[in-house]
View 1 (cartoon, rainbow, N blue to C red):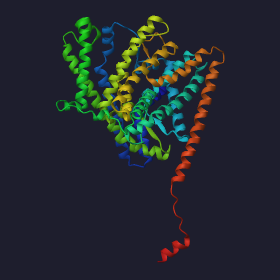
View 2: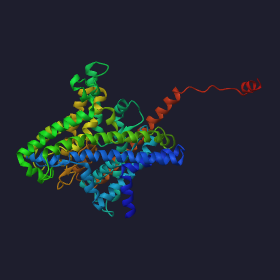
View 3: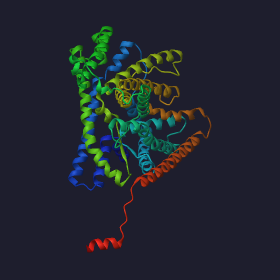
View 4: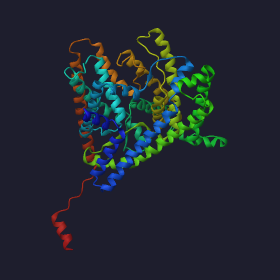
Length: 499
């Protein structure tokens, strides 16, 4: 059992997973042992710095939701993949199945990348594990018994096939815009809101077409008056905006529930100052973003060159698919615009869910915006929207993301694909793929689970066949466009040598 725990923890730790792939790439490039070691250590350290930055940022908004509930007087469920994933991972049966689904999915990912046109290697281990948990729970909810002497084997087969396909599809749907953002085709996106990012990209593209211009004004080209030129510094603008947001929320809470209420929530100590805490939180949020950006640069500087080895030896043309903060350095202003727009969309959707829950409290739950989810997914959607749609693309991309990551939890709750005793629910847009499983909950037949298995076997076979056909076309086109090396006759060569 300890071996299984090691495997589960090892492959669910993204820093180790990314470092491992970087090490393999360096070894395949036949680098010196010292170079391999240095590159591996820097990759792991860079990713841990990135994660540390995320922790700093999340810490600054850790009491946001509880204060939000106190101010607006509503209670409901919060989309929180990290917390819900931890809950299910702690369940012996589900946690074990999720770990095995993840490992099977990773092997399937490499297989599909090797034989099809889609050369993406998904390296965000933590979100990969959460998706595996969602699949295991959803399959249980539609009638599969997770016991080893019952349907565990079927959960592993369906879950493994599902994950193998997902790990290719998710990066593929947003790669069109990743190339625009990064101005290269060497990395891809690996995050559980790939659908949101692709939609944000297409929104931006649509705005560009409607405008009939060659290019729309980017968020990074915002012109401030001379007196406000300092706002071009993204760190300064983040601090000021978060300061304003925190003042509005926490001062309102202070007036409504008093300092004693804020102490009970845990926002401030009894001998602390609410004003000072607000100021520190705003600066801490900005510091978290700066740490994330530094970590991303460190990882990319080591991982992309090392990945050439994997590309050349194991999967020709392979692209590493990385977590969403990888795009933050390309458009820092869009990061913030997307976050705020997403949060606005989430608050509007919360108001709608309040009305729906009053109409039917069993079918619908009040979805409270999870500010952490809105930051990471909204910020990334903002960058994708900005890629072609500029400022308005960033605003609308983030806003639509806020709507999507509220609609997904509404659907999961309504279809009973989560445990309704938990105050949390899956939230990112890509969990919508799991709703496919929910369709089978309406088929109340003894052989429904076998139908699920058959469907996913067919889908996997179709994906392999289609991807292989497309890859052959790519190979043919490449061969046709490659100039032939002129043939030199043996006689000519001999004459040249004699001369």
